[in-house]
Length: 307
Image (tube, rainbow, N blue to C red):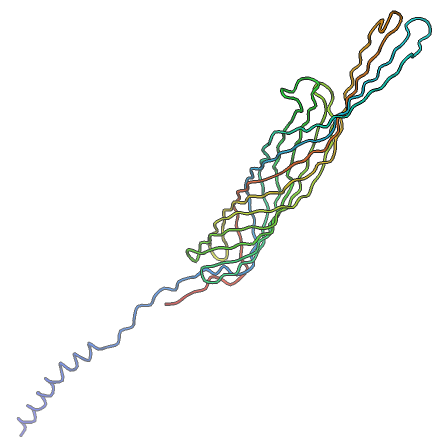
């Protein structure tokens, strides 16, 4: 009886061993933990600064009239000095002078503020910026070909003091941290102009004007996330501030000739010729702008996606 009991226990033990081994093989094993992935969110207000260079182009014309007046006086040379004749003849002739186009280049710098709305890989936004400018350039013109002495001549020196834009932005995100965008809207700025007008070989007349003009701007750029809420961008803009008038100017030149014993013995004839030119300048200003900058977005840190 005791032999039978020991045999039964041994058989149960031998049969249970494979089952226990199989159970050990089915012990639950946890899946490896994936590292969290940060997804950048562009939505929110932002503020930043920029610096760059601008290649401007200015052109101008002067249109007006040139009035030539001739005064002839005859004096007696014997006896009392009496004027025997005093005749004035004048004629006004219209003219148009075209100036050479000139470069208006310089360093620019300023700040921007805006807001972005992101929906998936698409982004829309509004941005306003204000720039200080060191752009300046000058050009000259002459009414007569080859500009001989006595020709009506002039010059203009333009300076873009400051400008700003208010623009919409539309962009696409090829990755969550890189934005490609186009932009366009209103542009405005102040152009200071110094003019001179006169006749070559004689003193010139100078005057100055200040013009605040509005126009348009279009362009595009690329912006990338750096760390936290900081981004960096590179941007190109074309700006056209349109045409602007520059007031009027006037210049006079006078020449005098004394003809002895004319028209006969005992008389002198003095001929004074005076030419006065007056007109208005018309100008146009366009600009090519390249700048780089950084922005700080006010909003939540990048969203963490867990997998």
